[in-house]
Image (cartoon, rainbow, N blue to C red):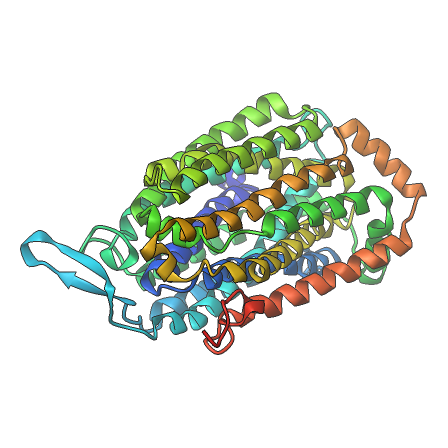
Length: 518
């Protein structure tokens, strides 16, 4: 009984660890399984990421449902249970699906091992098999986002009960636990996903993709049981009542408030500009740099360790730093380091997989700091009874605009034909310049995001001031216009990203292809 009391309320920590496992599986698979095993095109690869990112847009609906419709008097736990059950079912389905043959031929050299012959194709249909797995990945991510928004709401409620000096430290601790868990899972996937068929070095040692899906399914079931036993939602609800009609009115009023609308516009603009990524990155990484899954995962281990340490440093030293200055400095450094490592790889000056990830060692925790800063601002802005919805709305907007940015970037960069494998086989100066041009567009868009930093407050004191002013100042027409843009962006990016998943349409320039007549 004493042990039960001690563990009561610890479910967000266990959920954070499982979240690290699931996301390591998803993003390891996008590189090793989709990029290497099935050999999907560059714009398909980018759109796979977009489809996964688009699922975050659904958090607003899940969060509002959780905030407004309690089940058995609980607003979080019942929905977490449903979401985790769907996650377990979808990952188990990946396990039982028959595995397709790899795209490239695997040559067995008997005494000297084996290798992948990229000049010999054994399964031309492999990229077309990506669709069924992509659908399962999207379903898995949707259900995980559903559970995640409930945990976010729980943590936001708990953080709002903290005093101003310590507000946000609980979420910071959760992030540290998540990163440390990510270290263990990155090591696991580094060895498990290192077969030759997945771009690695091992002939027989390691697990197949479907076996790793089973590992995730089992982990999900364990997390489900733990969440049921050790979630203390009743301790923080304290008799609060939810009313859907009232919450709809309050949500619309919140979106009209000047301080919250400025924050939404900031996330939309920044995510859109950062979403304009070159579709050449996956090809450069695989064909020119020669990144292996094992090295990618080992670097992930180091990045997670640094991120956990950096998050602890933020928790101890930067909780009261100027938010605008943090975003300006971190974003500038992140883009500068990216430019240095990517330029030397594109022009063949240094094509080393360890050098390729040098910027990620720093950028990993820089990005997390910026993300965490946004979470601190939301805690200051979130009204009661809309704790989850406020948090989800921000990231829904961010996800939609980021997806729109990627789809927009695919259209712009389709004229450079950087998803064609011949560019990377020939590797001439003209090929390098074409790839470099798309990277210039990528970097320029990212740097332009700095012009919007004035839309966020400098610290908690300014956030409070803006919030009080927002109670008096409603921007109704601007809110309507903004929401129309967000809805258009979400629908457009979803359609354009889906086009890349079908053989008949992925060649279209609007989908990022080089033209179907070529």
